[in-house]
Image (spheres, rainbow, N blue to C red):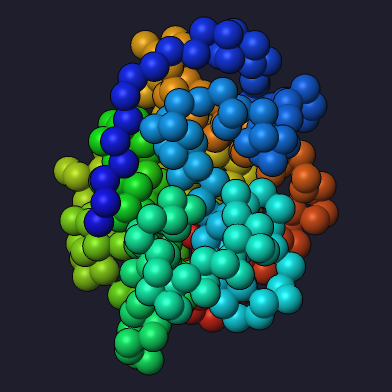
Length: 284
């Protein structure tokens, strides 16, 4: 896979102009889409690629939706629009995509596999298979903050999935995403700490918060853990791209909660629980 290279650069005016964020904010910040439009033009080429990587999860969903139905409604927070996907799918079909910077390498890999092997998913959902490729690509970033953030999220989501599967006696093999060491161990371990206590420093904390019976409260605790991780890993970054990326990730969390009323949120998480019981993994 192609690595993402980045040259250090400071963004004094950009960072100084970002409003302060608190965990319980419900206003005073831009939506993720508006933030993308505001920040992207101010970044260097290398940093813009790192920034785009955070938004690729929206593009991932749009990519799969477009493959299923060219008329499907696409997430507006994706970097690539319908016209982009029409062009890019055609280029991949014609194998004429080598110079198109819009295509992240794992899209090409997924598309190629889907054409060459009808059973390439091997029982894994399309979303989880693509997520595995996405995480693998992002974790190769030469930017330590980016690679660490994606590894942290992969391990966090996979451990939560493993805890759920053990509780409900579900085989986690097809539900764990990715191929890093933690993922491989979680697929088979029966240890109390799921075999990853020495590899993932948040193991005990995640196992404990996974026991929270109130699904909304559990999600809030997960976001609080992510928020603390971002603060810890950007403490000595003042005007760097890392500060911008962490700010964007916090805005995404706040925006998600802003869009959910208590009633709507409860229904969404009930649906997530039902889906997981049916053997479908939901990974952010």
